[in-house]
Every structure is written in structure tokens, then in C-alpha cells.
Length: 176
Image 1 (cartoon, rainbow, N blue to C red):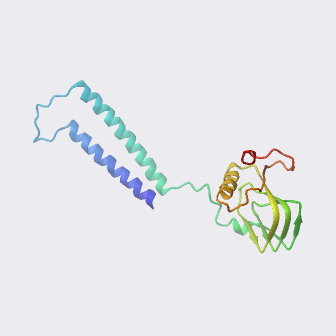
Image 2: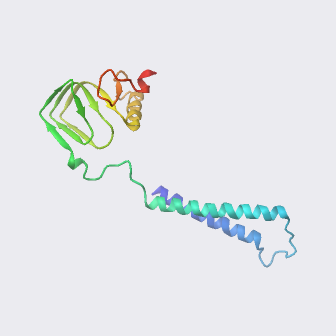
Image 3: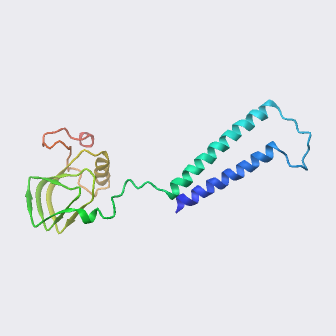
């Protein structure tokens, strides 16, 4: 909602600026008609006109964007309904795919969670005892760093590049 209010306000500001510019070029009838324009004022007026036109275009773009947001970061509404569920299983030292998967009543011991952020996931009554993370996504890496930085995730949990082997190169975060 605030994006829409901001877009409308920017359009209003540019309309006001355009009217002020128009009155600057064409003085009102009751003003002195003997105003002399120098070449500097003319050049300034052209630059001001160009900036107002660019401002109108930018306002139009923000106005359009406010009412037509790009929804790239969210999954489709029915994505959670399409999860591949695994139930009542024990995982030991396995690679466990997180994206588009749900785990119900599972036990996981020393697993590698493969997480690329390409779909939702779910853990219902599932216990994880020891894990590391494997990813090829910069967004997931940033999320893990944020969780570690806010102490919501242990700092000693390793994050690996998503190639499938344990001796692969650690991501930049772990090399600091």
C-alpha cells in the first residue's frame, strides 16, 4: 500500500513542478511583460524541462510497479500441496533434499541437507541430530550466514558447495 501512495505522491510532485515550470516560461498576464530572458535562463529551462519529463517517466514506472509487483520471491500458492512427502523413515549419513520435500515423523542423523531454495519444504514431528548444508544458491548461503550471525543457527555447521562429496571446497563463509 505504501508503494502505491508513494507512486501517487511522486506523480503529484511532478505535476506541481511542471506547472511551476510552465509559469516560469509563460508569466501570468498580470506580471511584468518586459521580462528579459538570457541564454543562461533558456538553457536552464531546457534542462529543467528534460528533468521534468524524465521525472514523469520515472513516476509512471513506479506507479505501474506499485500496482503490478513482480512476485519472484514467493512460491505458487499450491506449492506446499505438491510437496513430495517422506514419512516414518530414519536417515543416517545421507543426502536429504529439502526443496519441494516434506518429512513427517522422520529421524535424521548426521545428514547433509541439500537446500537450494527452489521450493518450499516442511518438517513435521521430525528430529535432526547433526547436519551440514549443501547448496549452490547464493541466496541460501546468505540466509545461512544471517541465521548464524543472529545465533539462530550454530556457527560450526559447515556449508558446502553442491557437488555431492564431503571433501569439496567450503563456501567463502567457512573460510573466514
